[in-house]
Length: 157
Image (tube, helix red, strand yellow):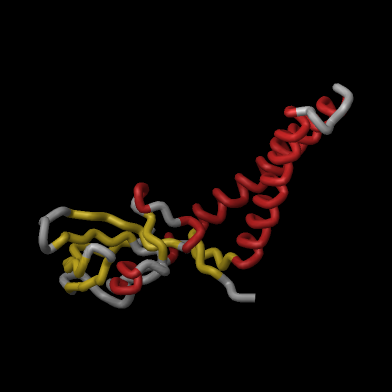
């Protein structure tokens, strides 16, 4: 089984979602199914069919989360240091074309959220940044064309 790197914060979010699904959502949908069955004929019971769909989603998501958690290799970012960009680093960049400053933390695929500044380790930008240091230039091919960035800082923790 291939492991996937993940920050402890990302791992915690997956565990919290799994716990909520198992302890809150699953019992609620079971109760909703029971209540809908008590109404009589389930063949034309919209509440029953909605609860069945919700149950299917919950069970699918639980299986998905359990699989992700089992493959996770949790990396404590606070224990990392160094001058080179690697998993867990928070990197400040400047776009060479627009002079816009950007800040991203390189995280696991399952915890990436670009709007929150969480950049997937599998993204073209993260792959270009890995192994680079402050002052280095990186060029990334994006769907919109080629982009150049300069690394301003690399921090951990």
